[in-house]
Image (cartoon, rainbow, N blue to C red):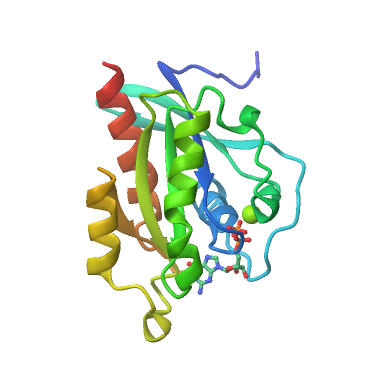
Length: 177
Ligand code: GDP
Ligand code: MG
């Protein structure tokens, strides 16, 4: 039979949150399709994308959820968070407000998610070094306060995108076994 096999050991739901425009959709399309778009992606009507990776001989299917722009109105529904094992909290290193809003995003996540959710802080658009507004130190300090790892990414240049997703999947895997 020519049926596509869908065999995996673990299925992890991962959500991305953070202000509109920080690059959440671009990070997801870079990781799942190795594609990048200069335009902000409009609502696509797809709730999640998937990618299967291997960690310690286990096949892990990551189900990565993207908002459809609801974050603009702070109207992300609880269905978005339901059952999530991990969350990437994303800000834009050139945009001060996206950094200032992190505490709100963290709080919203804690209110809606299961208590043991694994979180990681992502400073995206690190290719725009000359426009940087948030220092690595400030971001690392924030991450430390909230007990999160911190990674800087560029969806445009593919910097650390694989690493970010692999790292959170590994953290989730380590916390489940
Ligand atoms: P979202 O609203 O958080 O989903 O953000 P999008 O993924 O739609 O990206 C918003 C804008 O930022 C788009 O114009 C992207 O092309 C741009 N963008 C996303 N990631 C990067 C990046 O790593 N570097 C640069 N320079 N631009 C990016
Ligand atoms: Mg988006």
